[in-house]
Image 1: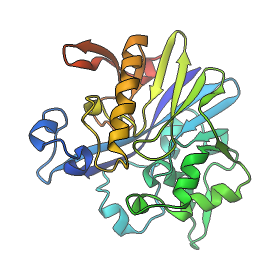
Image 2: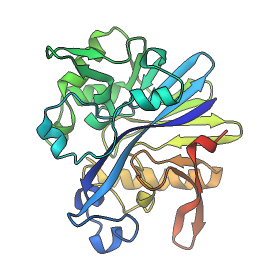
Image 3: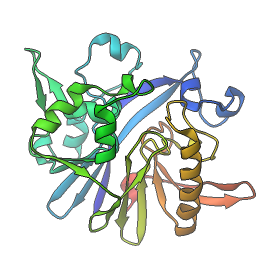
Image 4: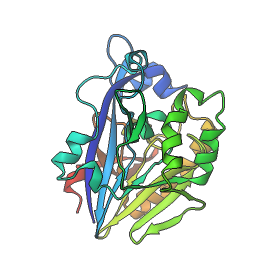
Length: 279
């Protein structure tokens, strides 16, 4: 089992949106902002290679939206999956499976492109797509809180491909890869837990998007059920610290991953970990 970080997008988000009810005087101590109150965000996807399977977890936001959409994403640097996959020795045709943790645009938009004639096409034409059934149905019948994050053109080609697979319950997806389901950020978010040697690596997606969100009360304003997020994090972090999990942060511009430790306040970040050093 080998894992590789695939950095799809660099962008910015309003710090108030990112940290919700947490006062700016507190969150700026753990995540810096610029003069416009924007914080740097990365969309860090994960390549998992096992046997004859090249598995990509999430696909970034892609480039098929109108320019106005990206203006308000405040993108910077390079974006897209082709170059980082090439750096890992692969092309889109080599990807056998894509696990979507959930279907918000910054996680699924990069799976399809818009041709010059305006038609849409899949990038990963040999891949099987995997998503929780709960999240798929939730995304297709969106709600006022999440409507701006779900787009039909992200889902239609996946559904028509004949290669969409809906996961109905948590459990082992492949030997060494467990998929858990969390509901605070959005219904049916899949969180992959990958066994590498004697270590368990957790791709935390938007459940714990950055190291700064390890405190229970640090929850993004975009979470649909923050009280559920609180409970999910409390239970999970106790287990993660006790069992020595490595947590990979999908949106943390400054920290790739870390171990956990404990002090008088509870579970906190421990030693930093580089993804490509995990083996």
